[in-house]
Every structure is written in C-alpha cells, then in structure tokens.
Amino acid sequence: MSNPVPKQIIHANPDKCIGCKKCEIACVNAHIDISYKEAKKRGLPVMPRIKVVKVDNLKYPIQCRHCVDSPCANACPFGLITYVDGSVRVNERMCAGCKMCVMACPYGSIEVGVEGETSFTGRKNQASAKKCDLCRAWRASNGREVCACVEACPKHALEIIDLSASYVELAMKMSATQLLRLRQTYRE
Image (cartoon, rainbow, N blue to C red; front, side, top):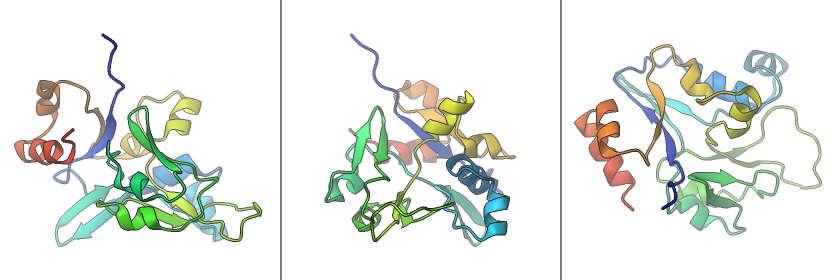
C-alpha cells in the first residue's frame, strides 16, 4: 500500500495570536521579488495570502484551508484552480480575474488583484486570484520546511500540520474545540 499524499494546512491558534501581522509581511516577502517595506515605499500593490482579522479582543489569521472538494475549484469556469498533491493551486498566469472563486470560498481566503511590479501580459485584466499556496516555490528555493508565515510568527500561533497524520498526533497539537472544527471541515 502506498503512502497517502500529505494533506498540509496552516493551523492557526487564536489564543496565541497577538495581531502583529508579521505573518502577512512574511507572506508578501515570499511571493514578490522585493521586500514588503520596499514595495510599500514604491507604492506597489501587495497581497498577503494570509489575513489577520480582528474582532473585539479576538485576532485570527485566515488563509486557504485547501479543501479536498474545493468550492473555489468547482466555481472556476476555466478550470484554473485544481487540487493537486494535497493542496489547492491557482494557475495565476492564466486567471482571468472573474472572481467566481472569491464568491465560492466559504473562508474568504481568496482575493483577486495584482501585486509587485507588473508588466503588460497581453491581457486587459492583469488581476488574478491570489490564495495561500503553502509557499511551495519559496520553500523549495530556500530549503525551508515551513511556510513563511509560520516561520515569522513571534508567538508560534501558526503551524503547518499534516492532516494525513494520525488522529492522536493531531489531538496532541490542538484543543478539543479546534479538533472538532477541523473534523467538521475536512470530512471526506
């Protein structure tokens, strides 16, 4: 029997999050060729694929949950969002920016826009869908085991977890409430 493909997600613990947004900055740095600070200084658009939401005293990072039966992939009229090797991926180069995926995502984790330095690509609409890609390219080019946001979090509120791991392994990392929510989200 072959080993299952790892199903990784970024797990956020709201009890530890202080809302510093260092995860957002690290995400931008991992996805554009210049630093967040330099991009802001030059007035370039930046789009973190993780967003820290603040409601009253609760601060919570939100990002793609890489759903197996992805509503965003089902909604894409061009088939440019696919579930491959345990994660949901967007073909940003071909994306038309129609925002169907934005409307379909139950977590609000997809945005459509441009980022960094843009050049004319022949399309009238240069915007494309942006969502968490688990920093695959950044991790590969930098030899990292975890995503940029996880690495940058000063309070360790974020961690990359493998949902194909045993229930016992997951239970040791999460509270009962978090485990229940996770089970409800990823029923297969």
